[in-house]
Length: 428
Image (cartoon, rainbow, N blue to C red):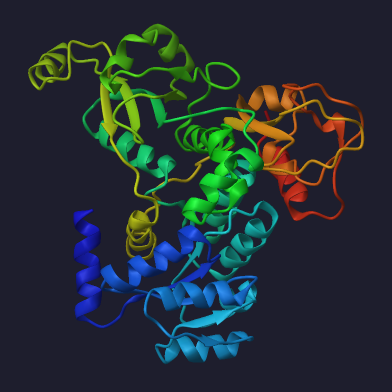
C-alpha cells in the first residue's frame, strides 16, 4: 500500500492524525489498538466504545495508554480534542462526538452492528466494518444508504474478503478476466460446537462462538458471499464446491470447467488443505493469445486458467490501510455496488425439536451455507444472520435448510426491518 503509507507519513509530519473511533474491544479490537498505537504514525485510536468499558480500557492499557472515561458526546469530544484516549459504554455518543474521522466496527453483532452503522452513515462518518455477519445479511442495503449519503462503507483489508477484492482488482488490471475467487481453509467440520472448540478458544483468548463459526463453515460462507455480492459472482451450487485438496493452489486451475465458469459469470468457492494457507486465490483467463504467451513465459502456465494468490491474510494489521483509503481517498476496499447475489442460509446442525430457540452463529443449533440469492428468495430460506432468537414452529431434521416458514421471528428487531427493506429495494 505505497500510496497509503505516503499519506500517513504526510499526516504524521503535519501532526493531523486520522482519529479512529472503534466499537468493540475483543481479541481483534485489542490487536488493532496495539498495532495503530505502536506502528501507524499518522493515525490514532481516539475513542473506544464497548458494552463492558473495562474491556475497552484493557485495549488501551495493553497498548501502553491511559484512557479517560466519558458518558456523553460532549465529554468524548473534549477528550478527543485534547488528544487523550477515551472509553465509553455508549457507542452512539461516540458516533455523535466531534473529532472522529472514521468508525471501525469490530463487534460481529448483526442487529447492534446495523444500528451503529446506520448512525455513522447518518452522521457522515466513513465506516470500516470487520462485521462479516452484518455485511452478508444486509450489506447491500447499508451500502446503498451509504452511497446515497456520500459516505464510504467498506470491508476491512486483512479479512479474507478484502484480500480477495484487492487481488481481484489487481488481476483485472492485468487484462485477466477473473472467474473464481476462492478462500483457502485448513479445516472444516459442520458439526463442531462451542464444546468442541472451547479449548482452542481458551488457548487464544477468543470468543468461542466466533471460533465455532470458523470451523463449522459459517464464516467462510459469509466471507465468500460478501465477495460475490461485491463483484457480481455467484455460487455453482449450495455450499460451493468446497473441495479437499492438499496440493498447491496452482493445481486448482485443472479442477474447474472454464465454460461453466464463463456461463456463471464468475463464482466464489473455497478449498480445504491447499497450500499456501491460509490465503486466498483468484483464477482467471486472458483473451489475447499473445498475452497468454507472455503469461506462460512468466511461469503462470499455458492456461486457459491462470492462478493468482495471496498466501496470508493479516486481519487487524491491515485494517489501517482501509481507514486511510476511506478517509483520504474515498476508496472502499470492498463494498456491494448493487443487490445481493449470494446469501448464507441457516442449516440444522442437529435434529431440532419444535420450540427450539435458535442460538445463532457459532452455536449448537445451526451452521451457515452459501446459496444464490435467487434461490434464497424463491424458497423463502432463513438467512443465518437472521436466525438467532428465532423459535422453531416445527421439528427440523439435521442438515435441513431452514425457511422463514419454519420459525417465528423475535419481535422488534431492526435487522428484520432492514432485510425486508433490502428485499423490496432489490427485487429478484
